[in-house]
Length: 114
Length: 112
Image 1 (cartoon, chains in turn orange, green):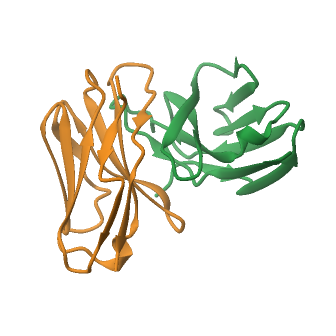
Image 2: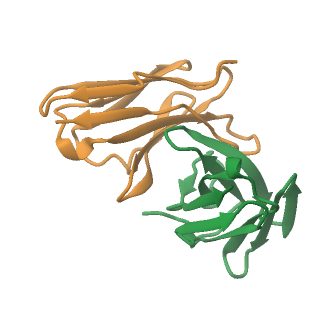
């Protein structure tokens, strides 16, 4: 398996634009997590899904953020409209619920909003 | 809010020395995990210790867990320059959903 795949790796966008981040989890994993990493706040859990269903989105900072998981092999995190303070590295991770709990992370998307 | 708090925030040692990082957490847990992050990369799982375990080894890594103090430590023995990275502890807050809450991390620099 190629691991968790995120795209794009880098995104530079202007304030006010819509941004869509994509994630393909490891095949067979049934839990998917979106994290945001910044120097100031560290690694924050934004939202997670079990069996494609959002379980806890309390970490989503504002209504400008939304996430979907239409099937077991794909998830998106959308920011609309984007703001400079959204600049961060966004990670997707997947795991198999009921396993040892080890999470597998993608390489991240570095988002810069100017 | 962050569950784990690592200490120290930054550590600089010479190659061959041992590195010890500490993590404190606030809630009950099923297990505690340690991850490593190289600059510009995703996190990689290192080791997991269950709440009923007190110590675990994996190669040059040694993890301890004290649930009464809600703390854990990660020891890297005979460090190498390639160990330079950030290290994070993560806990499940007692849930079985796979959810992980990470600490702020310790940045380790190993000088050759």
